[in-house]
Amino acid sequence: MSTPPKGKLPLPELAAMKQRGDKVVMVTAYDAPGARFAEDAGVEIILVGDTAAMVVLGYEGTTVPVTMDEMLFLTRTVARAARHPIIVGDMPFGSFQVSDEKALENAIRFVKEAGADAIKLEGAGPMVSRVKTIVEAGIPVMGHVGLTPQSATMLGGFKTQGKTAAAAAQLVEGALELEDAGAFAVVLEAVPAPVAAEVTRRLTVSTIGIGAGADTDGQVLVYHDLLGLSEGHLPRFVKRYASLSREIRDALEHYAEEVRDGTFPGEEHTYAMPEEELERFRSSISPSATRANDHAKEPTMSNSKSLAPAPVSEPPVRKTSSP
Ligand code: KIV
Image 1 (cartoon, helix red, strand yellow):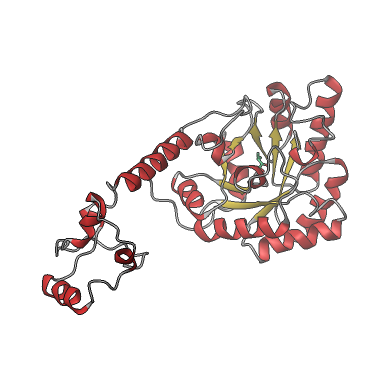
Image 2 (cartoon, rainbow, N blue to C red; image 1 turned 45 degrees about the vertical axis):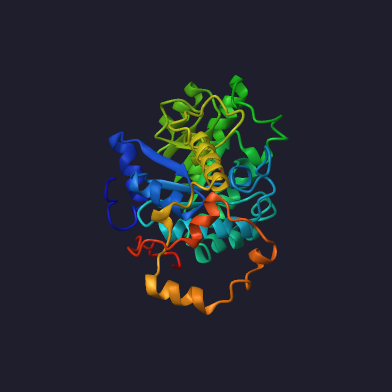
């Protein structure tokens, strides 16, 4: 585990990285452990994505239902845990589409109530004025074009965007407008690699690709997808770097099995008491005073263990739990 550098990554460092040709690493996170793991891995940007709807809140195939309050809660958790990476709060559907004023109010909530360093919002066209308004208020904005999941229905589903010459040109135009409006970076999702390369060449701010090929200034993946925590179909652009859902399932099944057959807890997980105190305790209680005795239950091999004196040496007590 590397020690993360102290202090917040300055936003202009992203432009400097583009100049140097250094890749920007962005990953999503939705809780404190995820934020700490991402920080320790040295990522530059953590996105508290509205993919939270699907990967942590249990909505299937849509990001639309997640609310401002839910996004603020998750962003606050991530911002509390990670110090160095730039924390980007993703504006959920309905929080910015209505008007520039409403968008600014909600962007301010991300910064003020949740500790985000920046916000991301989907779309170009009518959304460009939202970006301009928020940036003018002093809040950094990340744009997002190509496949914008909040408008997946309008786009005909979760499909690659910019596949025709006209659609590709429109995509380039949208990204340029977002840069002109003051966006500090633009996510390019599910677009052909040559189109993403062209956008990257034309923009002075960083492009962050997801399903956009290797020639963007940086890459982003969803935490649960890259760690193999998501199950079922995954888009072609996801690379799994671990199979954690398999490991978690195996561990939980093993735990359940050991609880049922009495293997867990073992002596090493059990607290003891001095022998003489145990004797005094036993003689101080009437033998028929327990409900278990009322039910005339024969002790089994495993529950009879608890009546035997436990070893006096204490197992270590975790700092965070009560003994
Ligand atoms: O919400 C999200 O996780 C995103 C990324 C896929 C870019 O927008």
